[in-house]
Amino acid sequence: MVEYVYGPVLSRRLGRSLGVDLVPLKICTYDCVYCQLGRTTNKTLERREYVPLPDVLSQLDRRLRDEPALDFITLAGSGEPTLHARLPDVIRAVKQRTATPLAVLTNGSLLWDPQVRDSLREADLVIPSLDAGDERLFQYVNRPHDDIAFEKMVDGLVAFRHGFAKPIWLEVFLLGGVTAIDIEVQKIVHLVDQIKPDRVQLNTVARPPAEAFAIPVPDDQLRAFAAMFGGRGEVIAARPDTGSTTLRPATEADILNLLRRRPCTLRDLADGLRLHPAEAMKQIDLLLASGLLTAASEGGHVFYRAPRDFLASQKTQPDTVEHRVEESGAFWDENMTDVPEEYSAQAVERFYNPRNRGPMTAPDGHARITGPCGDTMEIWLRVDNGRIIQATFTTDGCGPSLASGSMATELATGRTLDEAARFEQQDILDALGGLPEGSRHCAILAANTLKAAIEDFRNRRAE
Image (tube, rainbow, N blue to C red):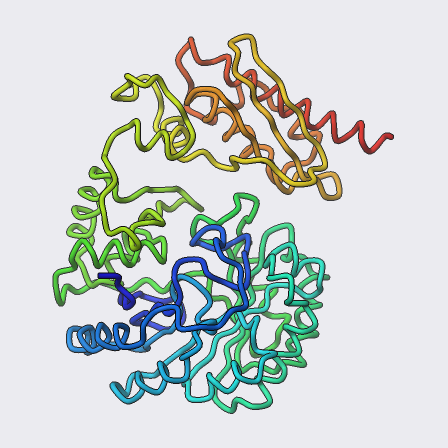
């Protein structure tokens, strides 16, 4: 059975909250570059009963019996909750069942619709988002549905404030080098003066984002930006560090249902599910070994994630190297049953989970090179003010080619053109922890393709 109630999650602002998922994975009005759940698969404005209300309430009844000590019930999860056409019925039914406050986490994109505003009137707390101060960066960061203009979205936030007397906490998600700039934050401050939320909560990338070019903002900068909002501003990017107490055993399904919606560290899992960290790690180890989880490093922390199709299928995919490699597009020798020991952990991770893989629409620079081994690599660049803000690649080669292309684009992102042009084979090999002698040429191919893409950008500008 599909699970619609998940957690509890130890939230950075709501304490220990039980999540209710009203929309299937990545059905949303936005396709935000920073989303921890990956790219939107169905960008829509259609409001309907995406998940059956009786099933949601039945699961909620069961979980409320098991979880008496909660700070909030939270309507959030895998997509935009205001797309659920029976949202007011959900809110009313939840409040009939528990005195626990109910919060709605929404991107705020539909608040221009009076029906959506009215559907939220019985919530105890609404947390909408505002991630940009103008249309240009709104399109870049949030990638909204074609029918949502920036001014229309902001007008909806203002109108909602006028009709909602209970608390509104406005989340502002800042990205390094994009919106985390004084002049851009000042634009948001101006809009906040119109919206008049009770709090302005600054956030940034803390878990693996949908796009690798979405990079975090340092804590000291976040604090400085928060001060620009006066007494309303606060930083929520750092989660409170609280201890774990085991109240009930968490099942494999509990862990997978939570991780499918929210990538978590070991501490996140332990705190949210009230597991001792040692017990949480033991279960994580088993799930990793069975291929049901993946791990990724972000900001010095390891985050665990369940495959996107877990909830829909509730079936375990075959735990073979061939399956996992094929899923990532890395076609090793069909008879290969294990990865040779001479490959580093960094390289193996990128065989199976290459970063920045895929072509780019309307790039600023592009190159395609075929190496002497026969592997072909392409790299695309997006450049702003002399700095590479996005780099992607494809290759028809083997695992080491995938790893090299992945690492080359990771190294280039955020660098100036001159800095990225200086990367050589050895820089890529060092970042990968080395490659066997017979695979080192893949790093040369990646370095040369990156240089050629930079040269293409410069040639286009010179024309």
